[in-house]
Image (cartoon, rainbow, N blue to C red; front, side, top):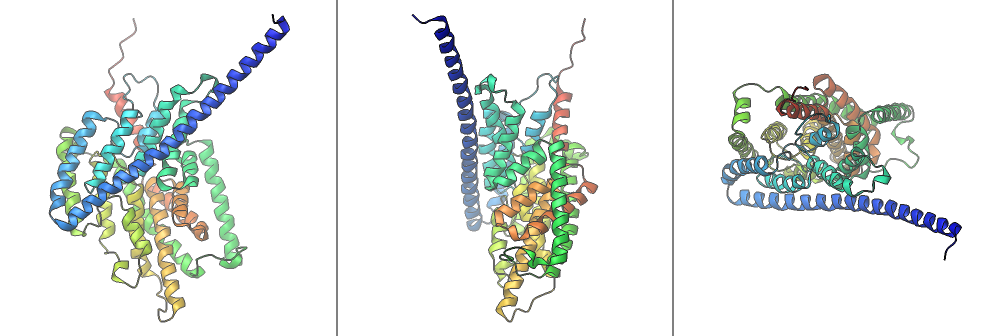
Length: 467
């Protein structure tokens, strides 16, 4: 028989063991959720790329194929979304924010995060890209990640005191990191966009201080002031300054216009087309598909799909060859195609299309910079370097202006192109472009999230008066 003291000691040991077990169980569940976000992102990427490649092969063989597949496919995808996957439409980021911020008193709240939405977002989102629509998979991956973390919340031990919203932030940030293979951008997205508040304001102050100090030091010491010298950057200081100025002006204005049109389309669009979208969403999606198909045929297929392939082609191409140039109409065509795809009600985001629009802007603006002497190797390399610098700056600038998330935008581009030698210029362009955009448009994702909450509140049944 155990003594009373031994019994108490054994009980304490058992309780401590159970507490450690619950802690490690919670960690394993959380880690499993994060791994699941990565797996789902990889599945989404593979399915989207496979369907998009199949579509482009069909277009190359049958020129008339987009006129059939894009409108009919878009109409079917919208019908499928509204019938079986309500809540999966749109980018995914406003939906995740609305789910986090909606007031609890709204009755019959329609969930925007669920396992069903994960399935619909991947299936319908990849199919929409496979029909030629200019949509990205990065925003949808945020909703996918948040939905998966929302699902595992119930399996976490209550003793861990992990709030649901914290899991949603982690899931959304993991989605961005997995979609772009950019972990630093995922961290910054969590701070800047999904948890706006003191942390976001402090981060903006910190980055602004870094930019000002870095620009001042660079102005006094020149670009050769780095401890180990410049890496893969032979453009002169005057070239960088001109590139930054042109990028800020063009991307801030165009990105702000893009953001403004998206906000107006979701909150204040009036007229016959808006009425048609509300009353006949499937027919409206078919008409949107017809417009995208026409734009794709006019541009030789350049506006079809998310746009990462076109961006990669511009970055890799030889500027002296015909393949290294894009037509002037690529930017306005991609601009219109992306807005049209978004207004159609299909699941899909704007990150990848925004990067391709930014790359197109950079390609056009580089013609305004002083030409280098192409008769020697140094001049040729410098011209290539200036061109790629302009593309990178405009990618970050337009994405920052469109999303008004400058810190996330410059980190995404920096990590995607390994552009650490451009870090100061990328930060300057992103911050100022986003500032210009704020003069034109309210914050994109928070405004759309507020509109979603207001729409659900307006459709909720009136509460019965208390007796």
